[in-house]
Image 1 (cartoon, rainbow, N blue to C red):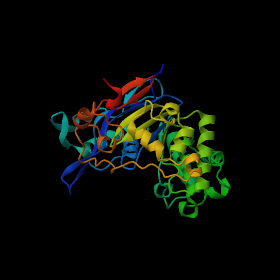
Image 2 (tube, helix red, strand yellow):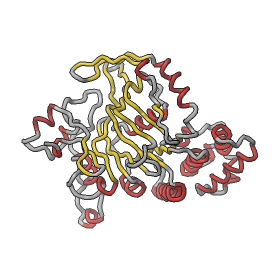
Image 3 (cartoon, rainbow, N blue to C red):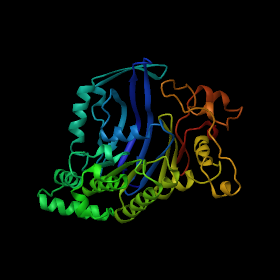
Image 4 (tube, rainbow, N blue to C red):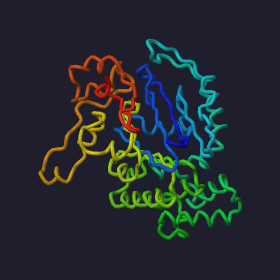
Length: 366
C-alpha cells in the first residue's frame, strides 16, 4: 500500500479470566491486520475464533477484565496515526514463562477511564459499528429516529433538532427504510429485525465515519432480508467508497463485498490477503483451515451430484488450553512427516508467501 492504513492492528491480545477453570481465555491472541482507505476487509472464521472481540477491542467496548492486555491499534483518518492503546503498558503487568503470558495484573478501572478519554472523540464520529443484534443495541424506550438525530447532533456540526431530523430522514431513505417518516417515530419493538438493522446502518453512517465495523450484519434475519441488507451494503460501498471491517460467517457475503480477507482461528489470523486469492477454490497457496472452510460450502456441483459436504474434523480450539505448536495441528489433514515435529511443537509466524498474501503455516516455510 502506498498510503498509511486507516486501521493497523499489531499483535493485539485480549484475555478474559475464567474463575471456574482458574485460567485465562485467550480470545484474541496476537492478531495483526490492517485496512487501507476505501477498502473492505472481510473477517471470517468459526464461532469463538475472536472476530467480534477484535472489533470490540478496536471500539474500546471490552468491559470485562482484564480485557486488552498488549498490542497496538493505530487509527488515522487525516494522515496522522494515533495509537488507541496509548499508555496501555502503564496499567498492565505481565508475567511471562517460556515466551508465553502466564499471569496478568491490570488496573481495569484506570484503563477504562483512560480508554474512554481517547475513544469519546472517535467512537460514533470517526469509527462506527453495526452490531450483531440491532434490537438489543437500540434503546427500547426511545424512537429510532430520535436515536439517529441524537447521534447526528453529538458527532456532526449539525446541532438543531430540525436539521438533524432532516438528515436522519435522508439516511433512513438512503438505506431503503419503508416509509421513513412513519418509521422515524417507531420504537425498536415495533419494527422488524430487518428494519432495525437498516436503522442501525443509518445511525452508523449518518455521521459519515472514516471506518465502519459491521459485525455479522445479517445474523438472525431471514434469507430474503439478508439478501436485501447485503445489496444495501454493496450499494453503499459503491456510492460512498467507505472503509469497512466486515465480520461474517457467510463466505458468500465476504466474497461479494470484500477486497481483502483475514481468516481467524483460535484467536489469531492464520490467512490474510486479497479476497480473490484467499477465497478461490483449490488448495494452492492457502492455509489448510481456509481450504477446509471453503470445502465445507455447498456448491452447485455438490448439490447436483447429491454429494456429502466435507466436514472439518475435530473440535474448535479451546482458547484456554492453547497448544505450543500450530493451533490447527490437531484438525489438519495436510500435515507431512517433514513438518510434523514443527507443527506439534512450534507455532509458525504469519509470513508473506505472495504479493500481500500472508499465511501462518509450516507448509510454506523452509
